[in-house]
Image (cartoon, rainbow, N blue to C red; front, top):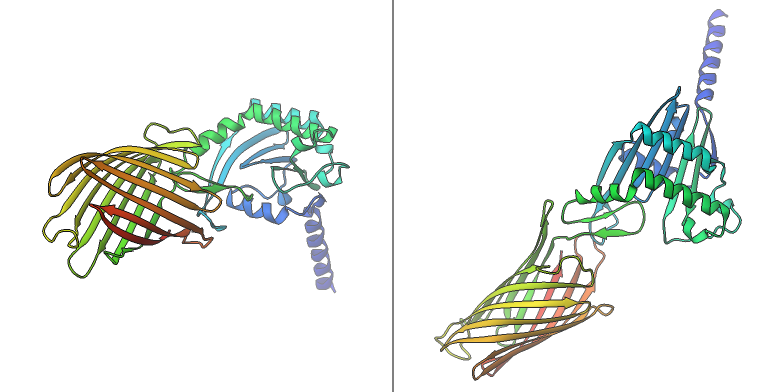
Length: 401
């Protein structure tokens, strides 16, 4: 009897203690699971199990602000974060974050703003009459808890809803917090530490790609030289250093001893570095050819230097050429191409002008996007080339990794 009574008392105490740890969950629970995964990656506490007197969390785009209070003592952190991902992939490969403590002066200011703004008294956005919803834009999340209750609220694009007094409260709150913590500057400093290459995102759909490494290889042949291959690599950067270097090698040949080998090394953004719609490109090329259908003995060698200016979908270039063959010749190069971005088609032409000699090449290429994890896209191309008045039609097939 005493043993049973002891068991009943113990069970009662156990359930009472657990009941005391269960908080009332208020407002919106739709994002709970998603945010739990993010917070775990960022080593942030779960507010549902928080035992603080007061804990407030504000989630901006790629930034999380935590403010808490216990027995009159306050603390706070600012966490900047991004998920590194592969281009054209939905899988995150790494989580990058920086957590910094907020000083007491700023914590006190933010705590006063939380109380004075009445932000904690607002309903969630879908319960506010007239609050428009959408998929684009930024969704701000606010969480707060005490020992008894947990609240989660979200607000989609308050700037779009500024006709509502509630949206003005949210917008003003965000602006004040951003000013105190200098959130834009904090984000800029955080992103400046990223690798020079790679794609980064938060939990949204938008993926921001900085310079990235691009590799391609494939088949390259022609009616004169039906066998061959082509390989290209673009080094966007090494560690935090932007290199902007590209290398390519093309080798065509036949079974009778003829061949055509060309290598190009190029540097992007030589003089124009900050403009999004334009850039420039400087390249050096070396080409050696033994073409028995023209001459059984001579090897033609080309040294070329080309400067191109690219603006939007048009590229124009001028260069110099040094040709070693039957004679040594110095000439000029004119280059032009036009890309049609929606169709992913590029038309290019290159003209080599020497004394009493005119060579040229015209090409057409089409790129196809792939959303595979390891292959970005592939391209097919056709070209017509004239060298020493001998025609050649060629084709290429490349995949990009």
